[in-house]
Image (cartoon, rainbow, N blue to C red):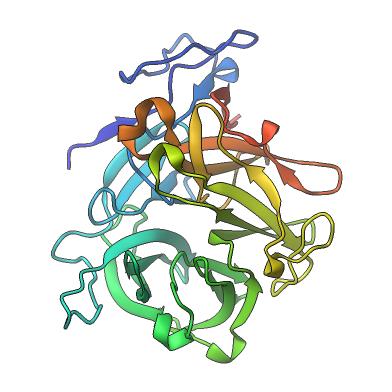
Length: 349
């Protein structure tokens, strides 16, 4: 595939106001002082919903998204701002499709989740049919390279296996040599331990399944910081263009299996949470964030998708914003809304 560059808008100089940019391609010029260069949202100016990202040993970030580009698009970046499209996880020939098609059901690949497990890149994905909540399966594929190609290995579980309607939007978590899957979409959020062999045969431990959040959420992921587990999720409508109400929320717990609570101690299992980021007069549908990423100064950053109101035909593009932490250890985004432009993450300082 011919490579395309999906970049930041032109940088903003310190103490100057960021100007409105057009859709033409722009690059940093050699004479610019990188310490004074910013970025403009979106950072990926094409449809790439439900982003997931990973940083590899050489410092490169790879991002994967729901297949608005068929077979799951893959992007890479050195700085979280300038992204290059490098291909797709699958081809039409290698594309997974193990849904029972006796009734002519053709499923789509949604909400990928990337992990590095036992020396391999493992791409989890949801294989599902819009509007048919029991046709939903969590599958996985494996590659030696984050750029693929990925070889489909089969399913982890489907809705019937775990008796959870709409078993999609999976998130993979590893801690102390043990593996977990969190998943669910508006029918409860669940967690379950996984058994993973050295040859990457994945078996769910069904007896460990536990519900940890209510019916308001989907697109969840987990971040551990200073003894707390922070469970991020999305509420509202994801996909209604300019009318989308998607909002990113968070609750936290001292235990992986909960209970997750808001600042008042109210439980996420009862649909209580804190708002992290919501729409404004430029972007709406702000949700389904990737797991937080750190720059070289340990600042935390969030990639997520949103509709840009002046470019709705671009569908759900990828935005980047810094996540700050208050004195009580709660994450927040300035003004609880997407930034138009900001100083970029610090790398290789």
